[in-house]
Length: 287
Image (cartoon, rainbow, N blue to C red; front, side, top):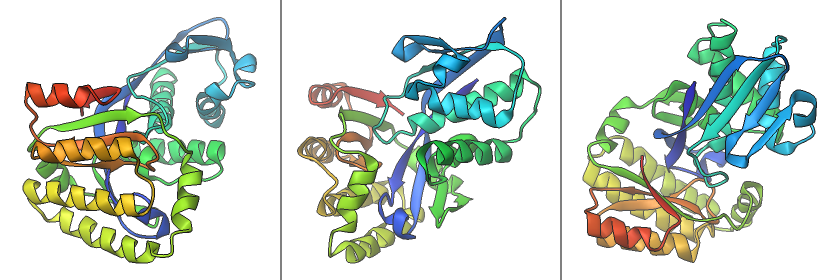
C-alpha cells in the first residue's frame, strides 16, 4: 500500500501560532508491503535494515512502524517491508507517509477496512505519541490525499486551490540537508520581536492565494518566501534556488520548517532551466 508525501504551500510557522496554512499532497510516495511470515519481521529497505519485532523496538529508525503496529493491536506474525521515494527530514512528511502507508497496509492485510477518517486519526496519534506533539497537517493531508486548509488543528478541503496550482508543473528541489531540527527553528522564530507582524502578512498572502489565479499564486509564493527569510528560517542555498526559479518566471518558496531542506517551484521549466537548477540542488522532482 502506498501513501504520498506532502508540501506546505503557504503558512508554515504562522500555523503554529493559530494562523492558516495550505497543504498539498505530492506524487512522491512510501510503499509498504505485508506478507505472511512465521515471525514478525520489519524491513526498512532505504536503510538496509531488517529486524525482528523485539529488536526493532530498540532501534529508533523503526519507531513509527512499531507504534502503528502496537496501536492496531495486530497479533498474527507477518513480514512488513517499507521503501520510500521521499528524502527524510526536509519538510515532505516522510514520517507521516510511512505511518499512513503502514496503517493502510495493516488495514488491508487484516481486513480491518479502516476508512480514511480513521486512518487519519490513528496516523496523527502515532506521530503525536512518537514525537510528543504533532500537527494534523502531514497525516491528514496524506491520509485524505487532498489539499487542506488548516487552522488551529482543524481542517477543510480546498480542491479548487489544488486544481488551480496543478494548471502548471510543480517541482520539488531538495536543496540541502537541514542545519537545524524543527523544534530549534520554531524557537528561532519565537524569539523574533517582529514575528506577529510577519505572521499577519503571511496570513494575508495565504488568504489571497485561496482565490487567486496561478500567476498570482506564483507571486504570492515569492512574497511568502521573503517573509520566511525575515523570520530567519531560510538559508543561502534555499534563497539561491528561489532567485533562480524567479528568474525563470516561476513561483518558489521554501516548504516546511526551513533551515535547509526543500524549495517548491511552480511553473513550466524547460530542459535548460531544469538542468541549471539541478546543478545547485541534490535532487529535482516533479511533484
